[in-house]
Length: 151
Image 1 (cartoon, helix red, strand yellow):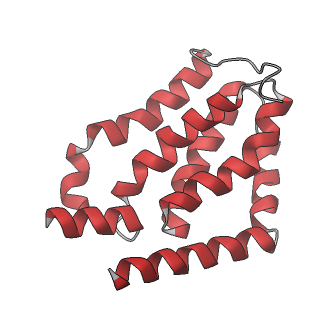
Image 2 (cartoon, one colour; image 1 turned 180 degrees about the vertical axis):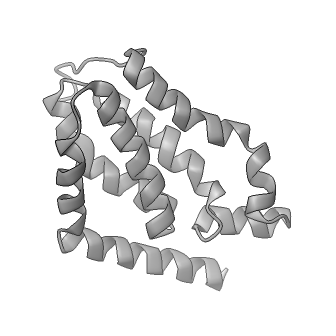
């Protein structure tokens, strides 16, 4: 377990540094300049979750960092925070097992005894859900509007 715990601690430290130095905020501002529609925002959120999974190597960071960064963009568009939560789950949670150096991917590979890239083509749910989230965003399917409870 020490290897997994060390990987988690290292990933958390790296994520904290990216957040506290303002690097993530700068990247978000660049991304949000290209956001014109709701689908663009969903695509940016999905991309942010996947990229954070790859760079930070931890599922928890891939959910919390983009979640904290994108919350104001969702509020500004009048989208429910449930939509943000669901999009983060569709991207950051489900793709974490597909990244070999991510804590989830390393755990799955060690537990199953199968390399991540070997089982990845068969993880259809994990591969299709991010695509469906983006498609639903552009088609405005199941995008709840913000209510007074969310504020």
